[in-house]
Image (cartoon, rainbow, N blue to C red; front, top):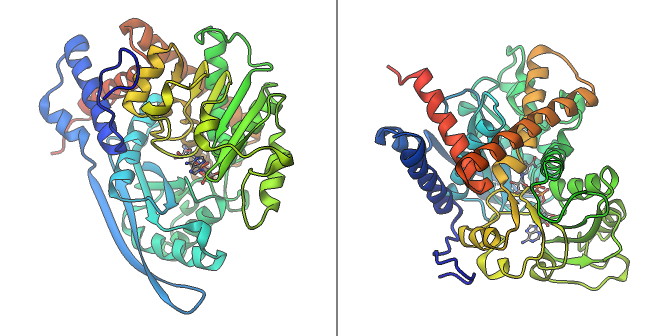
Length: 439
Ligand code: NAD
């Protein structure tokens, strides 16, 4: 039960169950306020249309053979191709990938991209695997999911534990099996530039989040925060998204990055940290690979860091991190959810009750898939766009999405998460009716 004053709801720690709960609540709201949704439509949307599970062997460096389990879940093909990242992590399972695929469908509606949602992953620990092992695992996993991916059917991208290198391997594997395909590079986004990648894709999720935050400040929606200059920021997670948001907010917006943490712990300095220096420290502590120990600063736990004084808290690590037990102690004015599914339902109620503005994941982190769309368009057209063009399109999409969700929130007196769900689901239903059901 609740640990937040006035919040009497049961905390749901399971991400998939939480997603379904949010979906149900939004459906109830649409039914009551906007207009009735047919029951069959609700059933159609709450389940993914395809869940593929693959088990495959990989040769390890010591000569042994290990078995791995991988997944590719396609949630909705109201639009094709479907689109979603690939995660390599020990906690990958069918439910997690299904929840992430569901969110991708909604995210694409929030930023108005003609994609359905999907997601994939392999249960493995990339931090404990060699380069060669990871490369063989990526290649074999790609082979196993080849029947369901393609430039016009389902297009993977990076997520936790994967990056440019893995996307390059996926691209190469697909090309080897589809030598005649004229735009086969479009099978995956987040590739290295030399293989048809897009300028700005690595920074895109973070940059998109920064545009959303900037717009929220501009529209005076965050109580007590009228400028990003010198605003104090705490970032959880220091991988692709976490490092880039820290660096962008520091360099381009003049924020003070007061706290950073990764899975091993965190550091805090009121006067601010330079993310580039912290990254150099992390990369040079070869055994620890952590921000901990930077410049002799005291090591804090992740919980201590999340509840440290700041104006802006950016969860950029993984799901179910902002839980009810922590929410009461969070001091930020705004939470920019760059990680997917990071806040529990109870924590969210507590934050709203405390008047903390929450920019929900399906809006805040949609910059990644938005620039993936640009990459896919370039691959199909045989073009290569300048960074300014990519960022200009990204900014326009993110500002429009923010404005649409903020308007929905205002019109219906909803918080931003409920507004994003109501906006996205209403939109999916509209598309379904326009398209019809085959046959
Ligand atoms: P990544 O693997 O590059 O980085 C993850 C970071 O989180 C690492 O620094 C890791 O040490 C840290 N971490 C893990 N558990 C932690 C914990 N309990 N506390 C603190 N730090 C922890 O992954 P990423 O690509 O940066 O993705 C981060 C989040 O952003 C994920 O939720 C992902 O789904 C979401 N996201 C990523 C993209 C993308 O384009 N990469 C797009 C949209 C959303």
